[in-house]
Length: 241
Image (cartoon, rainbow, N blue to C red; front, side, top):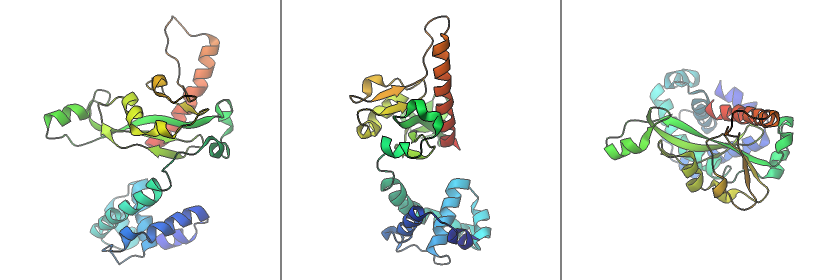
């Protein structure tokens, strides 16, 4: 099954990346030899995208569930280096974004990235201090938190390191390094929680839905934020899929 799907891949760039993965130095001593490298990478991608059980993957590829587990944890380091560190080392420029920008972004044509933070539940740390740091008042559980960025076309183009769940969105933006990649004229779209205007490099702007400081918004204040909120919510939904 895996080989048939693999051979139908027509995207040259993706194929080039996959070839780099299969020839990566971290995979020279992979202990599993019952499957071709291409199928091992495909198995790992299926685990990441579909979260299939190791039993299911074992049945599909004709191997044991323990072998499927070993394959995933052997492939992941190379996958991280080739796909994340070398391909996603820099967020796409405005020029590149415009090549695939949907019509709904016409009013935000200089948008470089849409950002949001994602929280994931973690095990309760043994240390009381670590428990305090990872406790999320929003999720009401211990979590780790990452800043994720999406291009206007829906592609995930940035992912920060993990921070304790109690860390504010603003602090993550400040320390994760994404601001160093921005250039004058860039626009960031974000949700209300990102009060980061004072952190932005010169010439970079952020557009967030407005807060209500009086009895009600004007018609103009309602119309544009509704469009903005719709775009941000749509793209942020991709992060959570």
